Each structure stands twice: as C-alpha cells, then as structure tokens.
Amino acid sequence: MGSGSTAARFFHFFACLLGNEPVLELEKLSKAYTSGEYALKDVSFTIEKGQVVALIGPSGAGKSTLIRCINRLVDPTSGTASLNGTNITAMPTRKLREVRRQMGMIFQDYALVDRLSVMENILSGRLGYVGFWRSLFRKFGPEAENDAFGLLEKVGLPGYEDKRADALSGGQRQRVGIARALIQNPSLLLVDEPTASLDPKTARQVMRLIQDLCHERNLAAIINIHDVALAQQFVERVIGLKDGQVAYDGPPDGLTPEVLTEIYGEEDWSATARKDDDEGGPEKETPAAFAVEK
Ligand SMILES: Nc1ncnc2c1ncn2[C@@H]1O[C@H](COP(=O)(O)OP(=O)(O)OP(=O)(O)O)[C@@H](O)[C@H]1O
Image (cartoon, rainbow, N blue to C red):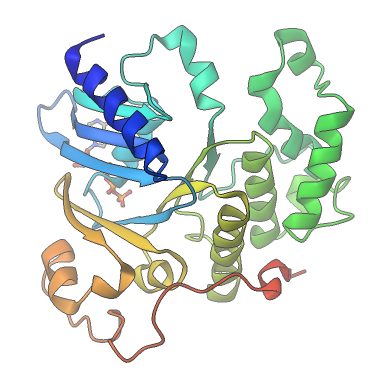
C-alpha cells in the first residue's frame, strides 16, 4: 500500500473523529478507454453518511463510467476510490464480492428476474452473503425473509410477495429493485437513472422513496439522473460532470442558468433552474412518501 493510501486512511480517520463520516472518497479518479480518450479525468469528491447526491451531465460526460469505476465493473486507469476507508481500486478481484455487497445497485431497467416472485427477487439481494449451495437453492434463511417482508412494507408493496415480477408496473418493479438493494444492508446506494422509464408522477414517487429511505437509514447515495428539475427537488447535493471532469459540486439551488450552460451548453434554462424565490431545498420526509401507485 503506497503513501497516498496511508494519507487517505489518515484523512478518513480524522474526518470520522470530526463527525463527518465519509462513506465514499474519490481521489483523482481517471479512466481512459482503449481508444485513449479520457472518460473521467481527475475526479475527486467525498460523500458522507446519509448524503444523497445527484450526478448530472450531458450524454457522454462520464456518469456511467464513474458509477462503474466505483463498483469496479470498470477498472480506473489511475486515482483511488475508497469505501469506508478501504481503497477499492487496489483490491484484487477475488475480494470484490465483499466490497460489492456494501454497494446496493438500483437500475433504470430494474434488472428483476421476470419469472421469479417479488420475494425471490428481493432475497436475491442477499446472494453476496451466502455460500454457493445456499445461493443455488435460494435458501436465505428466516431472518432474511423477515427483512424482506419489512422492506415490502417500507416500499409500499405489502402483500405483493408472491406476485411474479412480470406482473408489476414499472413503478412497482422499481420499488422491488429498491427493496432488493436495501436487503443487502449497503452503506452506499449506486442508482443508475432510476426514473428514466417512468411517468412523471411515478418518477417523483420513486425519487421521494429513495430520499426517505436514505434519510431514515443514514445511507449515502449517488443517483445518476438526466432530469435536472427532479434531481433538484429530491437531493441535497448535485455533482455536474462535463467531459469527464467535475464542473459543479454544490447545492441544488446553485444550478443557475449560467452553471447549467457551463455543464450542458447554451440553452434556455429559465424553466429548469430553481429560482431564488422558489421554496428552497429538497423535499423533506413525509408519510406520503410511502404512498404507492397500484
Ligand atoms: N466500453 C467503452 N469503451 C470505449 N469508450 C467508452 C466505453 N464506455 C463509455 N465510453 C466513452 O466514455 C465516455 C463517457 O461515457 P459514459 O457512458 O460514461 O457517459 P454518460 O455520462 O453515462 O452518458 P449517458 O448519459 O448517455 O449514459 C463517452 O465518450 C463514451 O463514448
């Protein structure tokens, strides 16, 4: 382990002492694909426990590459990513299973197994915790099943456990995807365009649900999202990528037309950027967050 990672561990330890517990720390993370072009260039930021962050930026800005570097589906070219103080960029592949179960993934296309029940889909989030034979026969134990029932309530789908995944609406499928990610007991949620396939109302419900569950569990999340207005409504921090670099890192209110022009280019942003006299800040937790569209 080099001196860089020793310094990173020191800063992580110090930040924890100060009460700002970093979950994810990126230090000059870069990725060049074989074409030689950089998809990410020196990306550095820290996400603390309980912080919900939107990752925005135009197509090709590097958002998916960043998420993939964090969960090591893609190996960064240089720089480091640390999860709870452990450098995951340097981790050998055989150890990745352990670190990946600390990262819950939520996908645009839900990634459910259609022919399986809601309960089986949720329990598959526990695959990283059981051995080969138990995973093969999908034996996760009564404790995991209890957790799954609790999560079904949380995501507003009580009584849905025996329904097949392909009998659900898009919004319901995403709720199952959220429950599957949470049953992993992750410390970080990586959320890839969770609302891209949903109508505006369901998209809001799903964003509200993610926000509420993160606050309730003090869980950090990065949400890759194209809908800037939706992001502004439900997160406390926005990171804007442009050409693989961080072009903005700040509160949703700071996304002025000028900042959006810097990230996306010239456009009439007046309908998108939150105005100073709008009701400020992301939505706060409300019981309505758990209302379900059926
Ligand atoms: N497997 C790959 N091989 C080569 N280049 C790639 C690969 N994946 C992504 N890229 C390139 O890296 C850059 C960043 O792509 P990435 O998919 O991360 O952007 P994005 O912001 O997620 O875009 P979108 O919003 O359209 O999903 C682009 O120039 C893209 O062409």
